[in-house]
Length: 207
Image (tube, rainbow, N blue to C red):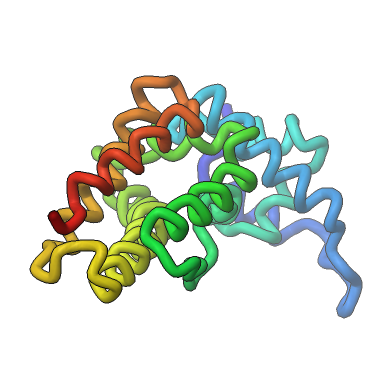
């Protein structure tokens, strides 16, 4: 029985399929359907139980269509969750509070209405026992958000809003960790998760 995992047999099936003509555009509709199906299934069953067969069935495409674009399940998942990554550099509004509000509004408008706030913590939890997944989650999801938060905090230090000797790594952990913890407690409610950030920032301000 096929498991939908990335195996020599499934790769061989993909390679044996008729190749597209040179220069023929790939179907943008199918591409988005695959990514959408991947996110839906990640939300429903998680990474470990997700299979290429299930994604193909949900998206209404063949497995070979998926393997032509993504050689492995991990690469498919990485692209599907890419929308969680914040744009860089972050907006400089002239104040610490304004910078964080702008950052939060951007993230909320992009991901709050979908399953991503539930998917990201679940991927992180599943990655504890999967080194390859852990490295991908760290690189693609955690590090970009931490970089964005660090940029905002550094500007706060430069403006004198935050203490000059602030430990930026630890402060980033405090801000980001608070949001992740609240996401878990609220079952993926991003609006509820970011609500305490202004109070957290007050703890870091100069007196």
